[in-house]
Amino acid sequence: MIKAHGYSAKELDRFRHFQRLSYEILDSTAQNLRVGNSETEATRMLRKAFHLAGAHNYFHVPVALFGERSAYPGEFGAFEALPTERVLKEGDTFILDAAPIFDGYTVDTSCAYNFSDDDVFRKLDKELPTLRHLIKDRINDGGTFQNIAWEVDDYIRERGYENCHKKHIGAVLGHMVTKADTDRLASWSYKGLAVKQVSWFLTRSRLARGKRRQMTPNWNHTNSCKDVAPYGLWAVEPHLASGNVGVKFEEILIIDEDGARWLDDDLPHHRRWARYGESN
Picture 1 (cartoon, rainbow, N blue to C red):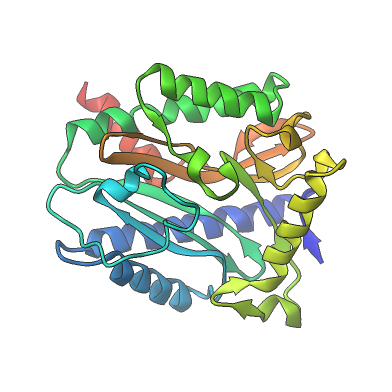
Picture 2 (cartoon, rainbow, N blue to C red):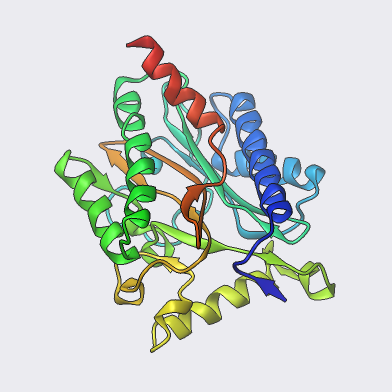
């Protein structure tokens, strides 16, 4: 069985724990990367760390985007985010992204990094907390996924930046994450992808493109998202770029009868954003 909403406080605590664990692994891997490491090497490091932490399959496999690839340049195809032999160079911005499954709990986390205090990186990164507040507030104002996706797009373009998440698979600003029973099927995977969770997601996506919009597991600007936001846990991932620098975060937003709220307000990128304020 796949559970998509109606989580108990204990289950939300488990999601929070696993989201923090995933971020710890992203951060640790980022700190251990060196100039000359390739994207392929970075994702291999991530896979090893997640395996040791107990995650053996994924909603999507780990991703590393170095330099200009963090900005999804040009006609960046849906599968071009898969790791390449592009190596990390001095001063590069890079993004690490992973959607591990721990004990049936899917989390999806990503973060942008730059260890050279790059001005463009900092300018873009400072936009992310504003988008984080905007997205939550618009849900609580009764906005639809479609309208919020367009408002985020307007915000990005009006500031002269490029919207990269419209180049994500499914053009998603966000997508649903779930809890699955840890039965025999839960251990099945294909090239690292969890068969049970991915099959559920693809089936819901297909139904939502028909007449069952409220079943959408995707959050984007399309007509399948014209209704009020469905209850559940949503991995939200605004992604914007300027030139060869791209930044994003990805974390879980809870939407239920109490409205919208972020699962956690103490993650690594939140602490980085707070330091910007201290330096002003």
